[in-house]
Length: 349
Image (tube, rainbow, N blue to C red; front, side, top):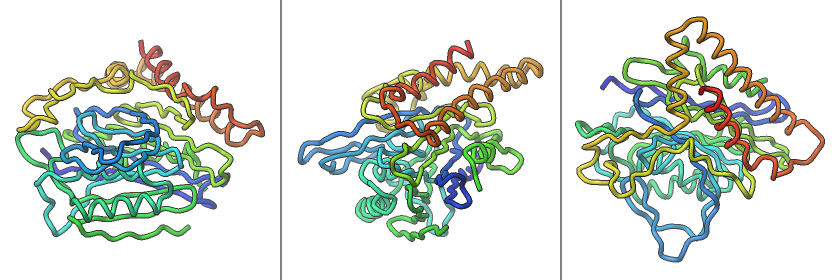
């Protein structure tokens, strides 16, 4: 396999970001054929002494975990990027270091993304969670669903909330963190993530931007945070769909990969001897759209135009929520992401 390209993470604070918003985004550069799913997990209380099974290792569970929404490769436990109910957003990416990454199974960087979201109410608190777990358990193991060779990496993280952002770089159990001190719009961030000429949007023989996210975090705490997920590869040919945390979020099975339970080749040792079909319904529908865009110039142009119009309608509706005078009605947005996914699939059909 070719050398892995970087994923790209961004954050902008006022005054560079408009309307008092913090804007966060990431493109996830992963193997071309890897499926990512968008998963919501509600807040939960846990029994004393219980364990949480991460991708390769189990650790002690905490008494309570926060509600999270994440985008992740379907075969692993953690997350490439995500957000929690408190407005914390985290993304990670592989980094090159002089110290070789360990092949011994421990935490993947993606596991620490999810654990930080589940356990942190602020960016600093999430950083402290990640650092403490890293120092205790370390990191290592295969980052790809590949039985032939182990692809292990060191990890860096962008950790953001309504007030501040931190960059955390890690090598083994060692780490260093720096706080980011500081007009961009949601549309500008999306356009950046779609830019192939700059290399931000990866599309090579071996690798592809397999999922993307943009989050908007109002510094006004009376306003909701809004998280836009693609759930599909190549943001230049995907629709960014909004998600808002409320008490009764409707789950979206059509954006979730099939569950193989204990028979999943990622859970059995030796690992990855088989590669099951992890495509979810949204992914399959999007494959048709990508094929049309690539093979039929006129139909593809019209299809992409309509996709962007659908996305624009969603962006405008969310802007009204952030700038309007009426309070948010949770009952009206609990099925927001579900409806967007359903509409996109029906449109492709």
